[in-house]
Length: 637
Ligand SMILES: [Zn+2]
Image 1 (cartoon, protein in one colour):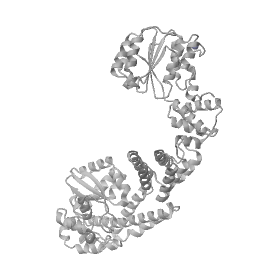
Image 2 (cartoon, protein in one colour; image 1 turned 120 degrees about the vertical axis):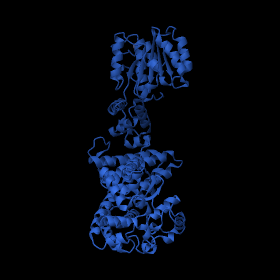
Image 3 (cartoon, rainbow, N blue to C red; image 1 turned 180 degrees about the vertical axis):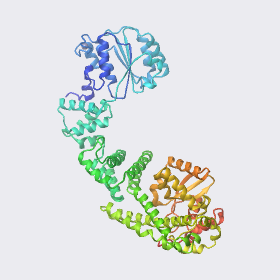
Image 4 (cartoon, rainbow, N blue to C red; image 1 turned 180 degrees about the horizontal axis):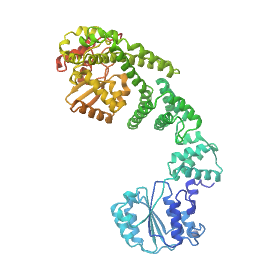
């Protein structure tokens, strides 16, 4: 039985004309050879697997060929056969990467002057020449300065910038290009046809895509697929060989994420783990899926740079319809970050699960901004109602605001409902429940916000007197009982933090200015609340319902942008930090051990704690201790 000859060797080009995709090099070399104008030193640079060494060997072959024709070797003479067999004594290959070439180069210097043993000329091929040590380069340079007539040197490198300029300047340089997908495809098709290998075109395309411009990789992957196939190379075979996850699995996960079905998402991960598939490949496929959804969402599925079958496009288009482009971009960013963490994790499976569960808990950017818009409208109409706003502004705590504050609740609740039925109709019970809870929380935070907005709007309408009402807060702080009685719907005075920022009205003006310069940034910022000022640090707290906005504001670039706005508006320097606020009905102790200062500050931005001056640490500590009791009831727990 004859040993199986790997395709890359069997199909190694025997002529210059067979080298794929590097005509600009091979044609020039052939002409130079024909005109007897070959240089004595060449540098071949280019990505791996694109034909540098192959071309160097062809050059060696043609130089020593006994009957070359049209600048091509004959492939039949003794010299050609010896080169093809790798036994030619005058073709010396040195690998710069192994032991970095010191001994070889020394050897080269000693022997380079000797006459060739087998043919007319000696050809040295030095692979990965950039790996040579400086000493080896120095030795090489002496040879390059006066190369003997019978010697040719060919250097190959993937990193020409690491080759010393003194060497580069003495070589004729050729840049090999990365192979096109179609070039790889053409070659593999040729091989398959000649070898009578049954194959699907899509499967070959998949191999070529993975080869990423390298013919060597493409041929080697084809070899592996031939070995793994049952007579025909099809997509499942290639997937198996490449460790790729079936697109249906990825589509299933994207579907589960779109429906916020965390359970289904985790079950899919479990299936992938059980099947022994590569988790990183799966994670990458998931990320690519999100990217595809975003591209479909933006292009309407028309993008021709999507490498998808029409069936896949149809499935993904349906899923993409459940997201906005912003949602998908946000998902992509958060999953990219999760992938980095995954790669560094000691138990990657857990990180994958956490990431997938997080993805399936996405919150729509549009819902948040829509909600804010709705609240804005409600706030304006509410302020117009006499009696509702005025008492709230004058004597915050008398319960006047509670009636008005109830206004927006049905509106936002209703719209959230309709949206839920529209989007999550296919959701499982658990997914629905989560969505519902989320919406309910969002609605209640909407109420609180509306109440606050009203205070601000009323103050504005009442003019300077109302603005000065904000300054009389210390006096009002002596009636803590009232603040609690009103519950969260009540209008309440500015927190000490807001006070230090010139009051709610001033803060709103600042927000408006940010919105004017960058709308999305302003909208995200609106979801937060200044909760503490510590020296230069301004801490903005976000409720867990505003995760998206929080995520966006947490972005360093956005933080810097806000700081610039703050400095311009308030005339002083702030360093923006963010934290997550405890959700409103605090049942028992606060979740998560956050910094005490943050906690206190957070409380201070809420009705009951608004009465505690920021510079009363003892009192703050007390509230910290007794937090559960002092806090407003805020509804059922
Ligand atoms: Zn020959």
